[in-house]
Image (cartoon, rainbow, N blue to C red; front, side, top):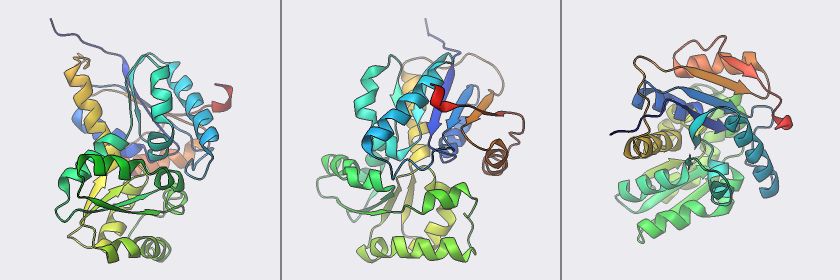
Length: 274
């Protein structure tokens, strides 16, 4: 007999970037309920120390575990590369990050063996993507660049082509990767897919972008399917959003990105109490 599990899926990120995973989950598993936490009051995580990232992540997970959830998608590149291996053994539900799925996709997708990675300072410094990609594809060479200004720009809605500020910053960050001739580029922070149009325009149509949030969501869907933990509910699942800073700012950006009105579904939470 097939198991069913109508509990919610938890999704966490340092800000609104994890909505890239939420959007994919909604498409792949439309019957599932989602509880999202974005730590918008402490974003970005990528410039923090390892101990601080661990502390923040434990609080984030404790908050999500205050709900009855069956899995957590860590839609944050920094947490996935810096903290997930240390923390995953502390919990009795699946905790799925962006690293493994994105690295596997890049290692298999590249044709010339030249893979680009952009991420936060902590993600790039960890070396985890390079380690995993070359383990899967020993002939691959990884060229990486930290892009610390991308997250605050996304959080402030500066994501569109024609915006001279984001286009100038993107060109500075991406120039070495373009010169290196990468044919595959991992967007190693889940905020970065919101800049896909800007990044793709600069890199050129021959460079394939890998959306780390979408890859994590796809992997999570596979895990829940294989373990027979999908919801039996009919119709469209619900979504609740929690943030540690402005509800209004998040609501506006989330509604635009998800192409659905999230007004009334976003709640402020004092994350430091967890």
